[in-house]
Length: 173
Image 1: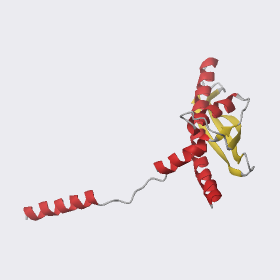
Image 2 (image 1 turned 45 degrees about the horizontal axis):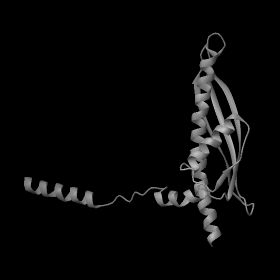
Image 3 (image 1 turned 120 degrees about the horizontal axis):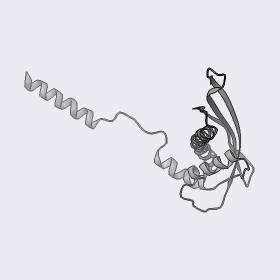
Image 4 (image 1 turned 120 degrees about the vertical axis):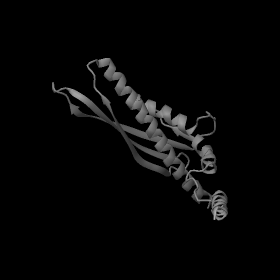
């Protein structure tokens, strides 16, 4: 009887090891590596606002981390809207916790043909505790904004990969 259980467990273990569950990643390395060439060809528009400059820097890191110089074929325009809300009021009536929401509308265009390749809106929100020290509040707000912009830049990058692959696939047909 014990021999039968050992043999059954051994067969079951071998079947688990040799079988495949069918999992495969949505964003595999081939798609990302193929699209890196296209991502390097994106020129990001210059903006004057502090958060727009920060987002441009984050997008440059996300789209072209190796800083490869190639001829730009696409231009990315974006606009940021910031909203700050008081979500907790303390006993004295002052703000105890604030929520920052950043909404970014973006548009990627082909520089040669003027086609809109990708457009959309991405938002992110986070909170921070309000302190009695104004400088501490300023630093907390800046750090929250930096984190939100980093997250938004990664989301925009993912959307651009998807839409550039579709667009370039249509161009080849």
